Length: 102
Image 1 (spheres, one colour):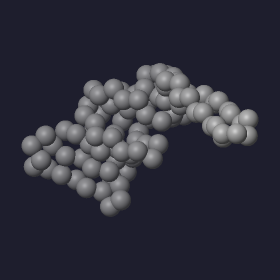
Image 2 (tube, rainbow, N blue to C red):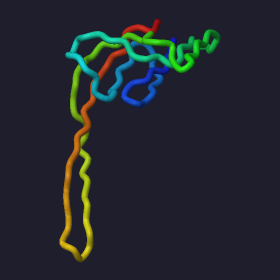
Image 3 (cartoon, rainbow, N blue to C red):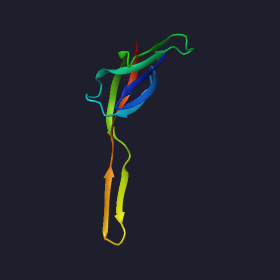
């Protein structure tokens, strides 16, 4: 079975056992939680359940770890006015494992 889940304003196509990096979730490593499910279907496409707008929290996940992504440098510059600014940003993420699709 596979499912489409929604978390952090994004949608992901997942199967049981998949590892994903998603926007940061609340919880310690090792805790289990459920995510909002938009679609559930079998591999051959015979049994499709489509939510309007969602099916509820039918996908169980386990939080593996938290971390920070790669650094992104932002540079602002204006010519002839001696203005320049450099800022770095590292986005927080949570690594999750899909344990069960109901």
